[in-house]
Image (tube, rainbow, N blue to C red):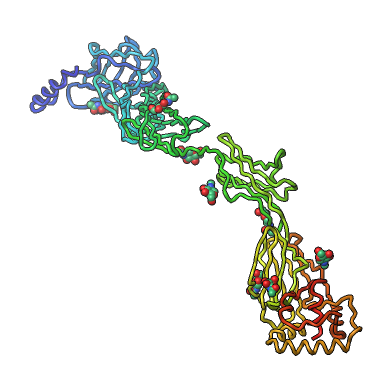
Length: 602
Ligand SMILES: *[C@@H]1O[C@H](CO)[C@@H](O)[C@H](O)[C@H]1NC(C)=O
Ligand SMILES: *[C@@H]1O[C@H](CO)[C@@H](O)[C@H](O)[C@H]1NC(C)=O
Ligand SMILES: *[C@@H]1O[C@H](CO)[C@@H](O)[C@H](O)[C@H]1NC(C)=O
Ligand SMILES: *[C@@H]1O[C@H](CO)[C@@H](O)[C@H](O)[C@H]1NC(C)=O
Ligand SMILES: *[C@@H]1O[C@H](CO)[C@@H](O)[C@H](O)[C@H]1NC(C)=O
Ligand SMILES: *[C@@H]1O[C@H](CO)[C@@H](O)[C@H](O)[C@H]1NC(C)=O
Ligand SMILES: *[C@@H]1O[C@H](CO)[C@@H](O)[C@H](O)[C@H]1NC(C)=O
Ligand SMILES: *[C@@H]1O[C@H](CO)[C@@H](O)[C@H](O)[C@H]1NC(C)=O
């Protein structure tokens, strides 16, 4: 039929000029058309008849199946409808909600008022019933690269252009638009074009095109997307270390699978084992410990690469710091042990044959600190023991003796032939510094000697008009002081004997005279002239935190007796200085009595 049309048109062109009535009866319909059950079918139809085109009410059209009237333009039924404009000689028919009974061979009849009627029994249209639509034809690349712009199309054939099928794309976000294209013999091709950008997550997903035909019948097609992407090293990758080996696992998500290598100290090494799990490639590294602090995993495929570095945990045997110690401060005896180790260790305190529990343990990073407060021990040593899986370390400390300074009571200020001197003996552990003080002013000691726990300080010839000189001993654990009084008169006396010997002789004479006068009056029991007097002793024990001022005594009796009496003895008067020099004028109860007696007679 179609082949006839150009011929007819040409004929018309040729004939219209001469006659308008020369068109003859003809019909153009498809020979065969398929109709989806429940859907619609549009049967294209063009008719010609002689003479001018008539108005619709002058033309009646009828469709017959065999001899049954299926449609008449005079009495239209619901499902059969003439959708062509008959005034334009368009007799296109639509059958909606196609049923079994619609199928078959149809022929067309036209009745034109005041002209004629014509049944086109030669131009049969065979309506073929189709139960199910065909699957749409999906055109899409299967292998796509993540992030690229991709076009896909989906086509469906049908013969219901008045209600074309609806397209839906699933599992993707994109823009789509539909097109409809007329084919031959009443057939149509509808299509939808989709523009989308596949993401990594779209890998292995179905890109689906769903077509819903008029009447509700649905068909779909899909492609399984193979989204290619560059390696991505996963969070689950890790390295672990035990005493002998380093094991690393690098989990790489990629498509296609990755080549995994390791880099240790700028040296590349292949993965020992590689396996694939879905899109995850796992590469492992097994090496002897220690390897390096840093291990790098490199993953490569044809789309790119990724790398991740692993900081290996430091696993080392504990190390005890040099400044660990046992010491005494104002709180008391304490031992402190600093241990560097990864992972942190347990620290134990040990006495020979026993272990002690640590009072305080702190961890900060790799450093563990253990403090042992006030261990009650008679032992000379305490050990700190640190153990982890990789080794043991220990350090032994000597327990320091705790002693506050103590000033011996034979410390004194005295005069001997050399002159006035003060001597201070202090017992303490560790040895102290001794400070001489004169009414609160520090003097520098002329001589300080330390021997064992004993410190001796000698102050020679203090030039002073003060009557009191103090010896102050301070160590970390306490302080002690002792004050010596130099009686004023003694001082004057002392100054006096420093004069030339003539003066001394004069004194001797005076003494002899007086002694003779006072003979027998001498009360001999305390015939000592104390040049110095210990007037007070202060002692402070830091450990007790409080200053306890204890011993304080005065030896006044001599002073009073001095004031009232002149001591003399039966011995001859020593008038020469040589003898004087031989006799130290010290705080001594017996040996210097004679000499002191002489001086006392001043
Ligand atoms: C006839 O009418 C149908 C329905 O309106 C239309 O789709 C078709 O294009 C028409 N045919 C011609 C030749 O104009
Ligand atoms: C790794 O995991 C953590 C916690 O789950 C997350 O915060 C982080 O973003 C992840 N990093 C990568 C690269 O996936
Ligand atoms: C793993 O690979 C490294 C380097 O290729 C090699 O030195 C090591 O011996 C391997 N380890 C094992 C357990 O195969
Ligand atoms: C400990 O101290 C000694 C001497 O001061 C030194 O030679 C040694 O390297 C120190 N050890 C540590 C671990 O600091
Ligand atoms: C003494 O040392 C211990 C341990 O370091 C500390 O806890 C304490 O506070 C110290 N006491 C004083 C008074 O410094
Ligand atoms: C001074 O020392 C002597 C002898 O060592 C001793 O007998 C005396 O009690 C001591 N005096 C004081 C006050 O400590
Ligand atoms: C006097 O005593 C001081 C201190 O003990 C001493 O160094 C000096 O030698 C003594 N002088 C004489 C003459 O004994
Ligand atoms: C005197 O010496 C003592 C002990 O060495 C010290 O604590 C004090 O500050 C000194 N005083 C002065 C005024 O220098």
